[in-house]
Length: 322
Image (cartoon, rainbow, N blue to C red; front, side):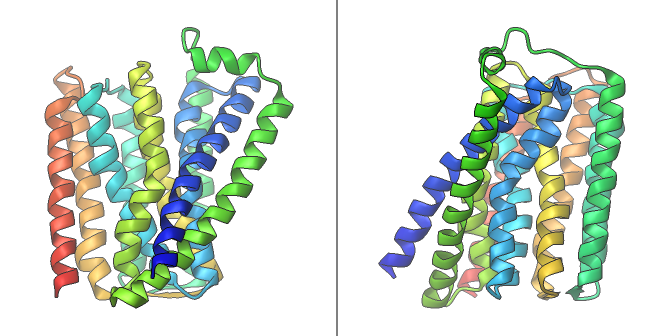
């Protein structure tokens, strides 16, 4: 048992470090290519911080633990909004732009709705996986085209981006590959340790995925969002959460379903998908209110999200007790 616990703890620690290296490399390359700032938050950071969930879920599916993949993806989505975004705006309130209301949140709601609809028949098939990947390509296409139309917003006063300009593209690519390689190795250790703990403690793989693995793989989102918010990069902070949740729902679950069909436990629909959809709608309503009232998405909203996370955690703990 202690070997499994050690594997999870060390794996999570290395996972956070490797994801950070991966993101740094991605940001360097993005700035060398003059990618618009919004895409750094939604696509670059969204993809980078979702890479742990993606690798963990793929490995879980390959090793015959598909519910761990689902729990990881949906648990991370809940944690990203309730805990990560909640903690971020407690420290630094976020300004809501019009495009968040008109484009980004509606896309996230659409993606969440499609995911819930696919699960309603009790199985996530290979065809469902293809649909999710195709939808991911379409959503990314929309984000890229519309962001390019908005123009490139330079981060002239951002020391991270300034230093990135002085870093060679080769070094950025090297950091990208190094981070990804270590990420895969640490993710394999997490999957093995999590499955062992689920067996030893008599817990379902779904619960392990929703808690230990989901929290661990959401740490990169927390670090990236806090860093962006402190630097006044509000678009990047919120864009990171929205982009990460889109990748989790479409890429993480889609790839797992492509590898092996997943039988859906009724509790996933009645509890986890319900909470994920509800908290996504709550985020949209709070963003809309902040935009209409010309207020920041601030500490009251952050505390509401964190209390929601506490309530969900208590619900999970009751399920474990039962």
